[in-house]
Length: 499
Image (cartoon, rainbow, N blue to C red; front, side):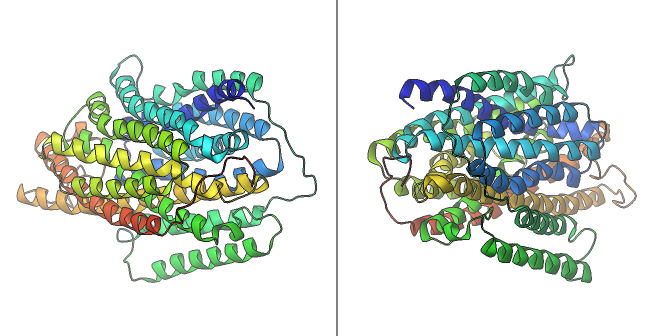
């Protein structure tokens, strides 16, 4: 495809990516209000996010593999339809349990949209030229991530709209994208009728990861770290994942191609992407909660306060994308990105409920710049090493591991935050002369407005002070990405779509 036709098709793909991104960012800043109005708990707050990430993670390799086997355009249209239906269902949810269930279905659509956009762009544009177009991708991602919290805050604070419109708002964009792609996207499809999709391997991966995340959610609350429940859940999870590796090594068409992920550069890029995903998703998800519950800001104010994070993504992804296309080199920008990401999280690890917003903003800016420089370029490293026939599976694999990292990060950091908050609230209530066990409002629900003023202060201080701990863990995770990226081979990106 020439540049004119690429840009016409790319415009529809960018809207799809925008919709997938904004569906998370719009909801993220409204989530404290959503969970509060549905009388949900901190664990349910975490699972509204985790359910979407888990479904997206588990389905990503399947969508990637299907893209190698069937019409990429048809798959994209199906995933858009799935996303629209699930968004409507989320908007009409009447309880936290229903919302979590509908978010699982939405996660299937989001996983498909994210990986199929990557695969289709890779099918149209060579790796070296893709750096320039990745600048557009980074720009759209940044607009979605900057505009999403602001839009989510505005919708939540507007009395005649309310938080349910955070789910409905993406639907018109999705319909426009569907029409545009139907008219402008024309790919040469290679039919392969003799192939099979490895549903067993995908099911085992999903089951193993899900069981491990359930253990992370319940451990230290419902049962001890060293207990028979821990032994059963962790042991079963490891057995299921070992069985998944065995299946993937034997089937003809694996969803996660082991021969690709065993190679040095894809393996290192996947490890770095896993670390970046854990740090970014895990850290960013709780920023909206920090500003609203820990600092007492409104949803709109919380959206405005997260602008430095999104601004960092916008600037760094655009500049790094241009430089990658110009030089053909990608390793220096990945290393710089993960180092800045780590430093940003170290800065955020010092915050509490009274920290200067200037310090918080500088930390968020560094985190955003780190993500913008590293995330898309790690995908490029993997795509640069595989032939066209394996593009979908390879793209699906690195997206899968990045989403897996995000899912684990949200679950682990959410569990740490919940435990820290519970401990601090109990200590604060004791100081006030209130028995924590007898107080039903002592943090069991996120409906802060319904609490007495003195308990509100205890809960806000607990959330504000506990958030720094999870950013310190994020910094440690990001450091793994630094080590992995240092060992990447300093290769030049190829000029052709296929090897």
